[in-house]
Structure formats: C-alpha cells, structure tokens
Amino acid sequence: MLQLFDKLRSEQPHCFKKLIPLKGDIEVEGLGLSSADRNTLIEKVSIIFHVAASVKFDDTLKKAVLMNTRATRDICVLGESLKNLVALVHVSTTYSQIDKSVVDEIVYPMEVDWRKTIQIAETLDDYVLEVFKSKYIGTMANLYVFTKRLAEQVITDYSESLPCVICRPSIITPTLNEPVKGWIDSFNGPVGIMIGTGKGIIRVFYTDMSLCDNYIPIDIVVKAMIVAGWKRGIMNKNNDKRNILPLVYNCSSSHRMNPSHILLMQISEKVVAEIPLEDMIWTPGVITTKSRFFYGILVLLLHIIPAIFIDGLLRFAGRRPRLLKQQRKIFINSILLAHFLLNKWVFKNKKLLSLSNEVPPNNQRDFGFAADLNYNYDKSLYFK
Image 1: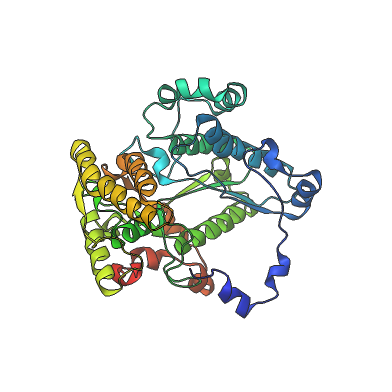
Image 2 (image 1 turned 90 degrees about the vertical axis):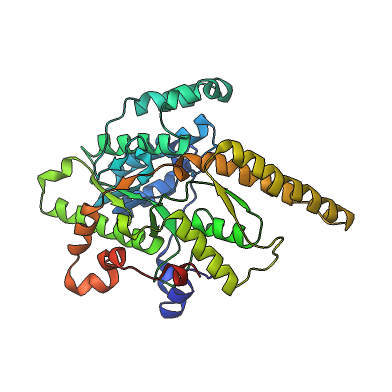
C-alpha cells in the first residue's frame, strides 16, 4: 500500500516536528485525556477537526452512543475551554439522513433527545439496551447512522456558543490526486468489493444493479473540511450573524457523476482482466440479485459449499482454514449493507460547490475542489 506521507517527508522532512501526539480514547468520558494533555489543547489549539468515530454497523447500542454521540459532546465541552477556538469541524455522513430520499445541506430535527440517550447508554447494561435497540432507533437502518445523526444534534445545540461546521461525506473512495493518486487505508466501499470479486471470493452480490451510489475521493473531502473551517473563521472575524447555526456541507459528488452498480461491475471486470490479482481462488465473475431469498440460496451454493471444500484442502495440507470464516463475514456485511445497496438517495451539494468558489484565486490550485467534483474522470483508470 502506498505510504500517505512519503511525499511530504521528501519535500518537507522537518514538518513532522510540529506534531504533538496525545493519548486519548473516544469511548471514555472526557475523551480519555490527561490533565496535562487537556491543558496543552486549551492553550495551543484553535481549530478542531472531529473525525474519530466507530463506523461499525453492528456495534452495541452502548458502544455506538458512547463513541459517536457522547464523544461529540465531550469534544464540544473541550471546545468551550479552548482559549482561541476559531472553528470546530465535525465529520458526519450524508447517510445520517437516510429516512429522506433527498438530503439537503441543513440539520434536520430528530425526535430522540441526545442527552437522554447518552444517559441511558451510561446507566443501563448491554443486555437491556440490546432488547429495546430496534424500537429505540426507529426507522434508522443501523446504529452508526443513528448515533451520527444524534451527534449532529449535539453540534447544533452547542453551535450557540461554538463556531461549528458539519461536513457530511458520502462513500469515501481513494485519492484522486493528492498527495498521490489512488491511496486509501480501508477496503470498505467499492474497492473492497472489487478486490473480493477479482480474487473470486465474492461470486454473489446482493444489490439492485440499476441504482447508483454516491462516491467522493478522500482528498476532495479533506480539502472541503479545511476550506469549511477557514470560512467559519472568516465569519467569526467579520462577526457574521449567521454563525448561530452550524454550517452544513454535503461532501458528495453531483448525481450525474455517480456510476451505477452495473458500471462499477463492468469496470471491475475490465481492471481485473488487465491486472489479475494475486491469490485468486476462483475465476472472477459475479451473479447479482436483489432478492433476499435467492441471495441466500446462491450464497450457499457459490460461497459456503466451495469454502468448506477449500478449507478441507487447507487442513489436509496442514494449513489454517480461513475461507468459511471469511464468507461468513462477507454474508453478514452484505445483509448490513443491504439497505444502502437497494435504495436510492439524492444528496444536494450546492453549498459545497459554492464553498470551493470562495477560495481565493491564488489558493485555488491547492484548496479548490469544484473542478474535481465536476470532472468526468476515467473511472477505469481511477480504480486501477
């Protein structure tokens, strides 16, 4: 995997001396910071980027609330202590609003109170919480989007005293340009699916092939976060009265730029044909279905039975079996992702595009991103 900071190390080898690593834990109340580290932040920090979160769809209610909602509250409490706070940029997700088919760049009200939810998570045990979890989260697809939406309510309430920004990325994909092309540190999203199909591990996919997902390269998201923090600071300096509510930006691609599932499959097949992957266990090829019933049958025939056979061969050869365990994980993740793969959303990004246009001309090359959002780049070359 490409090393993200190699380019920076070669161009500015001494810049890392500016970094001061601090130990913390978002699952612990108060962020797990020592008194000395907290004082360091209070004295020296003027901009907060709150990115840390649990992105697991199958966390317990307690863990998800503590890590995604309470930690956001604790970040805001810390922000109130900072002597020179200019901006607090909170990273959410466009999918925190999945009960709406069209998601605008605003904070939507929520019936559930974040304060009571934190109190419940802190006082009740895991067993009791899991019993009423499905009823508590209502129409939200999973705990991740539920707790991230609650976190937006936290940011909104604290925006009365803090200069807050909410950035909502859609599905993160590898870097488009900076600092190197094609870098990513996670195989979640389309990259993981392409690798799984390319190796012959994923032969059945549970999705509606006519739909499109919303993808955005990570370097565009980072630029948007930086510029959003800059704008918040400018508003504070100008005493802009709009700073009572948080600025909200859907960091998403324009709808016409999003490839359909069938196009992504075609791209995957083309890339694998040109650059075969190592350790393939089967000839690449995928059957897709949006029927839960047929998906279960196909998984049994094309995933489970071959996995049992191959694991048997591995045991016979004195090697550790692993494929059946992997197929179980793939099946569980497919079910967890089904709501997102079988439904369609439109994320408005007018404010995001306008934000890029506010970057001064002499900074557009480094921090402008509107051109990248509208650039119809070669998807096959990009995913290579």
